[in-house]
Length: 507
Ligand code: FAD
Ligand code: NAP
Image (cartoon, protein in one colour):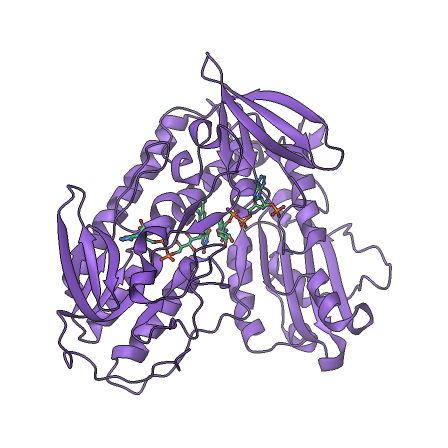
C-alpha cells in the first residue's frame, strides 16, 4: 500500500486529458469534483444510473438525493405530521383530517428531487467540471471508457481517478425476490400507494421505511431474522421496536423470507422460515420492500484492468486515507471498505482528499472516521455517537464503565392525552437518554445515545463535544436550555448500576 498523498501542484503536469476523473456523481463524487475544480484541477465527473430491477431510474445526485436520505426524511416528516394532527387537536386546533394522499406526497417529493438534480448540473457547470452522463469502466490505471445510454463509447484519460460509485440495494437469495419485491430504489417514487406492506430486514432502511408507511396508514410488517439494528445499542433498538409495535407496525421476529411468488391478483405470497425453530408459514402482501443491505457497484468497473484490489465479498475497495493500492486511484463514500455508509462521511472525505491533492496551500487534513454521529429516522428518532453499551462492555469491561440513564416525556407531548386502540399517542417515559463513560479515563464519554424527537438536531450539537473528548463533568458543567429535550444530558445522575428507577414523574 502506498502512503497517503499530500503533494499539490500536479495540475497539468502530466500527459493526460484531465487532472482528475471522478466516477460517480453522488454525495461524495459531486463534492470531490467541485472541490477539485475549485483548486484549479481540470475535472470530469461521470454519472450513470442503471435502472433498478423494477425499472426505476433517476437523475444526477446519487443515492442520498434521489433514493435515500432526502426522500426518506421527507416521507418520515409526512408520517410525523400525521402524529402531530393528534397533538394539534389536543392543543385546540379544529382539524378536518381527510386522510393521506400517497400520490400527492410522491409528486411533491419527486418535484423537489427534480429541482435538486437540476441544481447539481448547474453547479457542476458553474464550477467548470465537465459532466459526462455515461457509465465509467477502467481500461487501465489512467484510462476510463465512458459508455453513454445510446451505447456510444469515449475514452478519457486522467492523472488521478476517484472511484465514488456508491452502492445499490441487494436482494435476498430467495426465489422470486427480484421479480416480486421492490427496494429503497423504488419506494420513494412508487406511483400507487403500497397497500399492505412487508419490509424485509431490521436495520436503518427497513425500520425507517416501516415507520413512515405505518404512520401514513398502511398495514405494515417487518421481518427480522435475527436482531434489530445490529451494531447499535440493543437496549435502545428494542425500545424502538416496542414503540413502533405499540404504534401499529407488526414485527415478525425470527422470520426469514425464503420465497416470493406473484399471485394472479398481483399480490405477493411470501413464505417465511422461523429462524429459531425451522417451521414455515405464508402470508400475502401488496408490496414487499427488501432492505437487506447494499452492495458496492464495482462489478462493472473492471477494477482488475487498473490493478485495483477490492474485497471479493462486497466489492468494496480497501484504502489508506482513501488511496487504493494503485497510487493514482482513490475511493470515497459507500464504495470504501469498512467505512460508514453515510452522506456527510462521503462528502467530507471527498473534499478533504481533493484539498490534499490539489490545494495550493499545504493542506494535510485527513478524513477522521471516528465518532461519526448518526441518526436513525424511525418514528421515535434515535441519535448516537460512539459506542453502544455492548461495545463499551466488550472494550473496557462491565466494571470499568458507567451508564447514566434517564427516561422522559418531551414537554410538547404532555397536553396530548389521546389514545389509539388503547395506546397513548404520546406515552410517558418513551424517550430515553444514555451516556456511557470510561471510569479509567476520568469518565470520558465514550457513548452518547438519545431516543426522542429531533434526534438528528440534538445529536449533531453534542457531536462537537464528543469530538473534543468531553467527560461526564463537562456535561455536568453545561447549563441546560429549558424547556428542551436536549437539556436532559446536562442533569444525568442516575446510573444503571444503582438500580434506581430513572423514569420521570414531572417536569
Ligand atoms: P452514491 O450517492 O450512491 O453515488 C454514486 C453514484 O455513482 C450514483 O449516482 C451511481 O448511479 C453512480 N455510478 C455507479 N457506478 C457508476 C459508473 N460505473 N459510472 C458512472 N456512474 C456510476 N445517509 C445519511 O447520512 N443520512 C440518511 O438519513 C441516510 N438515509 C438513507 C436512506 C436510504 C434509503 C439509503 C439507501 C441510504 C441512506 N443514506 C443516508 C446513505 C447515503 O445515501 C449514502 O451513504 C451516500 O449516498 C453515499 O454517497 P456516495 O457518493 O458514496 O454514493
Ligand atoms: P444493513 O445495515 O446492512 O442491514 C441489513 C439488514 O438486513 C440487517 O438487519 C440484516 O440482518 C438483514 N438481512 C440481511 N440479509 C437478509 C436476508 N437474506 N433476509 C432477511 N434479512 C436480511 O442495511 P441497510 O438498512 O440497507 O442500510 C445500509 C446502509 O445505509 C447503512 O449501513 C447506513 O449507513 C445507510 N443508511 C443510513 C441511514 C441514516 O443515516 N438514517 C438510513 C438508511 C441507510 P442481520 O443483522 O441478521 O444480518
